[in-house]
Image (cartoon, rainbow, N blue to C red):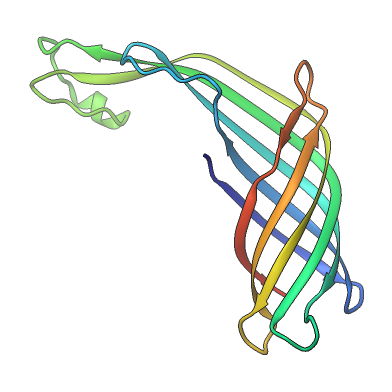
Length: 171
């Protein structure tokens, strides 16, 4: 499980066709699960800027429900970092600088995170998917549920994922 955030703006060519520019952030889940306190933790994020074409039927037989299909391409940036938590012994003196960096002190010791490794990789990629809308008002505000498959040609290992996104759209 992870989360994603998508924001975009575009132009309606006509009642059925649109072009949009979008920014996407996805917190990618790691396949590695470390549990001990001294074991490293992995943080992986993906960022994307894309241009997409969307074909949409905003109302199916006069109802509040609609369907759409979309696809496009753009730039994808995948970033991974490997961190390790270190427990500082209780006898260590706590100084105010620790609070400035976001670490707390208590009589039983405290934890400091240390970044072991970090790497980013960018590449071109494509996406395609389908969505379902429910019109909320006559002004054009819609709630949507969408699933899209993304593929980016990142070096060594291609990046593939298919997030399900819930949100609001105005058109």
